[in-house]
Image 1: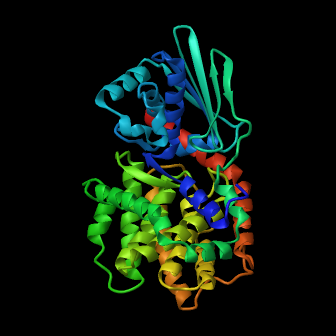
Image 2: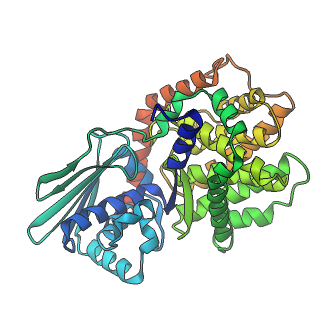
Image 3: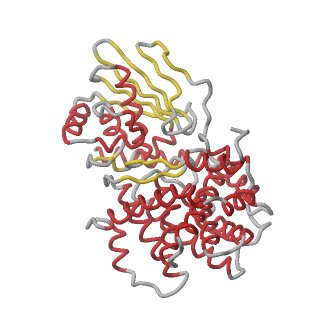
Length: 431
């Protein structure tokens, strides 16, 4: 990889970090792991056992599973045992049918599905074991949502990854500095960035799908807030409506495809819709929009590379919010220095926003981050931004991102406290 031309390497990283999903990636990855193990077993599972990391369990415990009308990892694991499409990876829930849902519910009702978590694993870890007819198969995912690291059949290892690259490809982006990324994208043939326009279009369709549902809160937001006149309020309102609606629909279990960024559909929603809302408001040309989307994605991945794939901090707020601010400045014709100022402003405002697990609080964080990012971009163009050298804001952006990584790691106890609160609520609901 190190011998690739710099632009080629950057584009390869961006393309590898944008992926189609259906539903939240955490239960989706559980479904994928079980489906993979079932494919290895070559028998309809009589028993399904899943062990995940605490972080992944926290993210999946209360989120809707598309097409099921249910929440959490139990139904996701059961569906993996009856949907024979592991090749779909994180889009596996595209293939849910009434028959597969009935079969999955039967497995759950019979007590044949068990899901638990372990503290003795990395931030992103899944072990799925299925058994039938005296045979078993086991699949382990680690480091990234669809990264299979170990496969066993009847206790015999048939595949073992040589190493687990935690955080997937994102860490490779630290081979660049942000000024180089800005320059590379400014000189890139815009035809090579069209995949970003396609990703943004997919997420815009998700927003429109969600806004067509009567029970979506952000449909009410869309209809309740009068159209704002002028910048940046009109930009912010549109970004908040689109990102909030798409995120709410996804978290609630609405069946619709979303393009994820850095392993997270909510991050993809924030990045692509936050920027696209601005582009459509100012009627930006497609070429200009594609470059800005690329810069948004690159900055988001750069910030996230200092954290784990799953975090105590909200990735949409603390990684993608700065990315949208940077891309918005580029879209508005600003300089690299102004983009840096906008990034600092978002971090200064949102530092400490916690991840409370995937669910119906996410739309509020996602929409707030998107709106604040566009406000920060507007202010940066007026010469107003958070100053360096205060709080965690360092003189360089890269050092600032490293500080966020340190804070994220220091919040491990807060993460466990949130998980215990979610478990307590789950127990009360079951009772």
